[in-house]
Image (cartoon, rainbow, N blue to C red; front, side, top):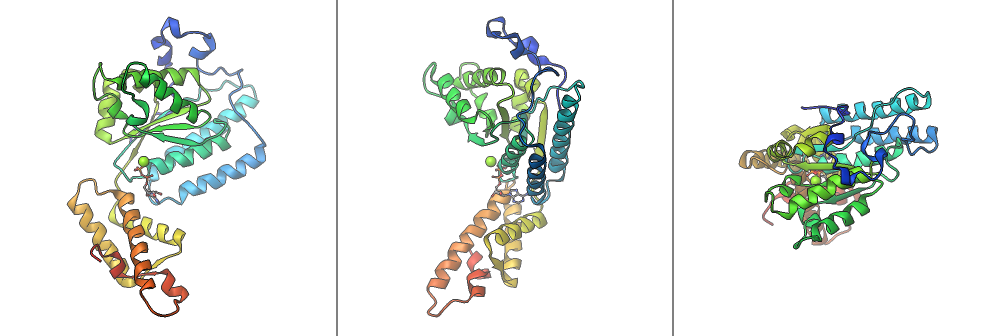
Length: 316
Ligand SMILES: Nc1ncnc2c1ncn2[C@@H]1O[C@H](COP(=O)(O)OP(=O)(O)O)[C@@H](O)[C@H]1O
Ligand SMILES: [Mg+2]
């Protein structure tokens, strides 16, 4: 896993065009004497931040992701204390690249990060706006910049999460995707301290995207890789999802679910990961409901909770 936190090389400075420089403050990292945190009640904040960290902790697996987020959290907290003591602080460059297959937890983690960043005071709102190419790229000249700005506006104070971000660079120089990238880069400069961007997508595609867009590389210092889950992790995820929904698996259903997940993983390279599990469970819940309404007797609490092997079968 590649981890690089807080890019201190300030590459942003060199690539900003003179015409874009309206305010000198915009092109330099946040200075130690400027206000960097949107703080509220310190004690209350700390308690909430701990709760958010335990929400992260409750996710199955993701050990290196959790470790990196703990580092980021600790670093922000210490920068806050240093700032109070008038010690030099590092610029907080928190734009990120999330690499991984669908269903590996990227959106889930981004949403938790938004909440955390709000609680520690690096973002005023912390909400997540998730977009993809079609939300940013338009059909005629000027349309793209407008569409991108609209999404940026919605995300201000929080996180703009761009799924399959590499697709913005696919069409080459003439494609409007490039216009979206330029507009995003400009938004990052204009809304420093009020917007965090996360670019997400498949590992290989994102590596290619970063490689071919050095401007992007230098602005996104934090890279997080989301690995595929193992079968036992997917079963733990299934149990967590069932627990949250107050359902239980029968012994037979448990074995059958393991068999289904195992089969899917062998069949596809990208098996759908946790998303596959969620779909299997949600389908089983619907099948269970059909089975129960067809029964002609009063249903017990146990029956209402129990998913059987038959509920998990694909042909009904
Ligand atoms: N480690 C995990 N523990 C528990 N649930 C998870 C985990 N990873 C993903 N999920 C669940 O799986 C589903 C898909 O995850 P998501 O974050 O949308 O994946 P991605 O954005 O990588 O496609 C969501 O319902 C999410 O809550
Ligand atoms: Mg996602």
